[in-house]
Image (cartoon, rainbow over all chains, first blue to last red; front, side):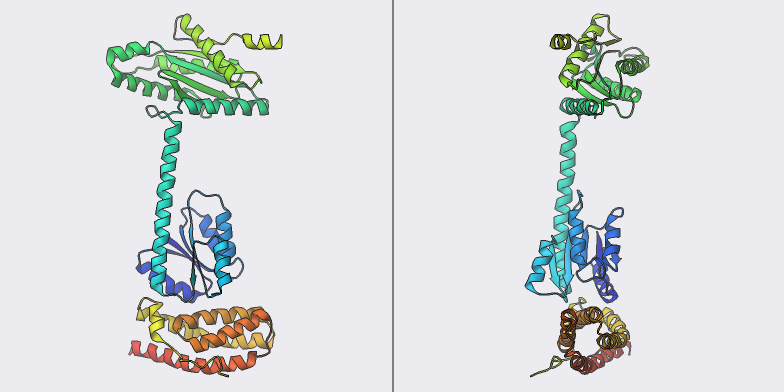
Length: 311
Length: 121
């Protein structure tokens, strides 16, 4: 574990460094507040921080306030060290959000014990942060394919339609269905069915632009959001997705052409209504299915609801 | 009234508690101090002469910290008084306190030097 030790007195740096090394810490030294701040801005900075209060330029209290003012998902445990020993000094230090306070000179064993409390807090914080990231991932991703889940892709659709409306930019969406997927599952079993889903997702992703979004909408249905795209180009992207899957030789049992897609495409022409877009792609997908599958169809323009509302 | 230097000059047990009993490290620190101290004292005298209160406060603060670390309370108190004078920009008693510091430090330096000699012999 790395420890940052900031003290303008070389004497203290030397004496504390020896003890810290003996306890197994990797010690990073700073001779003033500005140098300490630079180190904390660097890559993989120390999370345990020992700051001397009295330093030229930026002092320990100011540095502590700066550390706390920064948005960061990793916690820095700050111990302020000083020979200012008045009660109001302790209050000032804790008000600056230091975690702990040690009056100079201190028994070195006390520092050792206090650093251990700091370590406990840091370890606890990082395991919580890790858990939180895991939970956040699980809550927004489909566990089988790793793409967005239904709720997350619908949230993205709402966000992208609002952004497109604000920026007066077009937006297209597509609803994709794997043709006769039930038959694949019934014939080859769920294990191969799941592999087909995973491979289909990878193949579709390879045909999308890196800023398009794809999510698992339902069973073998997928939803694609294509920002900045009018219907014509949305159709082209969807056609590229369809062809790449159709051309691919999937599992040896299925062979080339064993997996095909029907896709419905619609675009938002400035209305910013994600519900309308959803109904439109659904209608278009229904059309593609009805016209024989393995094809891309566009929603019929303009949607009936709109004409009614305008009329 | 006792002066600020009227106390035992150096308590080695206190000093050792600050370095986890590492006598080798303590010797190294003492040597740094013995080398630095004459310049620090001279600079404090100059700052009193030049009425440079911030410099006096800073130097006296550093000296106070080191002396407390060594367990030298008498000399430490003199340094603390000088730090207060610097902070409050009131140098009325500064020369007298500097003299008291010098006399307290004579004892401290003697003990530091004797500790360093012991270890090298």
